[in-house]
Amino acid sequence: MQIVETVVEMQKIRRSLKGSVGFVPTMGYLHEGHLALVRRSREANDHTIVSIFVNPTQFGPNEDFDRYPRDYPRDFALLEKEKADFVYLPTPAQMYPEGYNTWIEVNGVTDRLEGAVRPGHFRGVSTVVNKLFNIVQPARAYFGQKDAQQCVVIRKMVVDLNMNLEMIVVPTVREVDGLAMSSRNVYLSPDERQQAPVLNQSLELAKKLWLEGERDSAKIRLAMVDLIKQSPLGKIEYISIADALTLRELEKTESPALISLVVRFGKTRLIDNILLGKP
Image 1 (tube, rainbow, N blue to C red):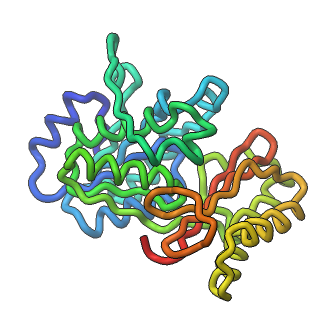
Image 2 (cartoon, rainbow, N blue to C red):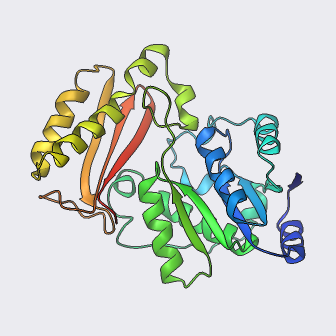
Image 3 (tube, rainbow, N blue to C red):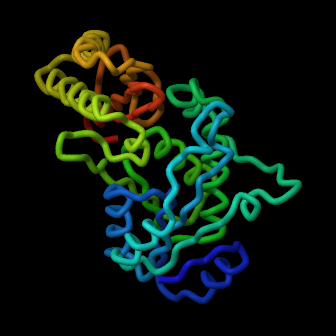
């Protein structure tokens, strides 16, 4: 496994590679969800490149950029075990050199949900992913379903900009108790961690109601709220029941639907979602 630190070096290596390249963009502090993406890439491609970059432009002024967990030696050891071929480790100065002033904005699907509560977040996400795609030039790029809105945004960018790559979304990997794996889970206190699986429990309740024939989004949402309130450390930020492609809220939960939510435990925002039907 080779660690690559500059744009020029990564582009030089990419030009030398024969066969297909799979790409897994991450912010590091890797967990089993990330490693599942690496395995999928290795199964389908001749080469696998993983990037680790905590992207400053997708964090707001009061968010957790400075304290976002970082442990590169640990990440390298995990990726070595998974037989990744290259780890691309650019710096902010490499990605955003002095005078940088070009941004990618995907309109429509970014003005709601996370986009509504985190202004500028998706501008940072779409810009850095676009830059990474340009540098790595993958045949396939792998993302986790846990970041559902991010997947919708990036897929639209890929389509709208005629990018020559296949975007593959891999199901969310969960802990034994159902909590979606996330690098931010380390922020949780023991009591918060014990109550955090209520996110997945509420999503499973919504799915059960839907499978039993309930289509009234307000009733499904109310049932989710009632369940989450049984975990008093969790404070609901939003629960969305939206069209899985446009992210527009649905009065009737018809397929395909994306049910997503954010619940805050102390200073930690946890996100999760479930798809009903196929988008």
